[in-house]
Amino acid sequence: MNTRTYDSNRPQEISCGLTCKKENPLRWGERRYYALDYYLKQNFGEKLYKISLNGGCSCPNRDGTCGTRGCIFCSEGGSGDFAASSSLSVADQLAYGKDLVRPKYNGHNYIAYFQAYTNTYAPVEHLRKIFTEAISHPDIVALSIGTRPDCLGDDVLELLDSLNQIKPVWVELGLQTIHEDTARYIRRGYPLSCFDTAVKNLRAGGIEVIVHTILGLPGESRKDILETMAYLNAMDIQGIKLQLLHVLRGTDLAADHEAGLFRTYERDEYLNLVIDCLEHLRPDIVIHRVTGDGPKDLLIAPLWASRKREVLNLLHHRMKERASFQGKALEALSRSQ
Picture 1 (tube, rainbow, N blue to C red):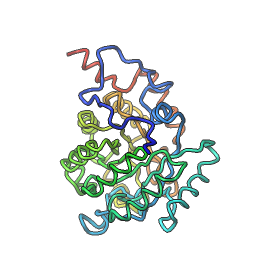
Picture 2 (cartoon, rainbow, N blue to C red):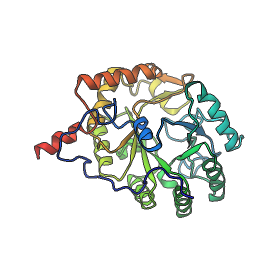
Picture 3 (cartoon, helix red, strand yellow):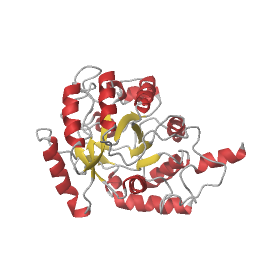
Picture 4 (cartoon, helix red, strand yellow):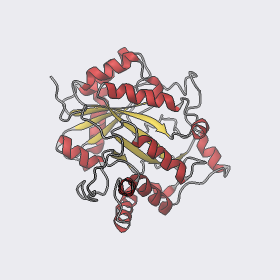
């Protein structure tokens, strides 16, 4: 039985996402951008929490397939520091996650988020077991899978397609940047063409694609970052995470930071950059993140990032001051042509 509550095959406007009429800066409720909360309420009827899961997968950038040290910014936990231990069953991890969010959430439905490491980098039989256990849980209404574009073979794509017929499946791809020089520095381990192919293959199966980008990578300018936004505007993607660069203890990035090879953003710099990015993004792209949740015990810089609620409040205030909204720069460009 298909229990999906939205149409994952809906047509996408990927040229610019704008019509000729003037955009309403508050078209997404009280936000000036297409926030995930708004999307969830429109499509699932309520705000949902993600439960971070560890499927026991590894990463080709750690096991020697394309590297052994991982991406330069990645923590020892494979960016899944909020997930429970992989020694627990998926059902037990879900129960653990629900206990964690219960003080701030009185709903009953959740998104299962396989976050740690590369969650399609395992034999397909293992993936089928863990994904089916999650998606079959009565409290789970959608499945989100974090992975790499180079770990989506035909057998995995077939599995994801079959799961997407049961409940919505999102795939979160760690792109970070379109610039190959930066990609080499961060040890991403795959070319941009691999990302392009992955998006095409996922969308062929009606699977929603969320792209992870990092703002503030060493050597990247505002122009470089906006070029990444422009590139993604032309791709058939449904969501994006704008992640502030976090320097975490124990990473190779931390060693470069300690050596003074780069600096992280000050808060006001970052706020203005995020707004610039939002103004240059299609208004139909859902914004899943505008800052980040680095583990406080690992975070070296920038320390202001740990005050997430304060940062979000300042962002919303700054957008109002600037009369800003998602897609504003594209609208201005459209009017001038």
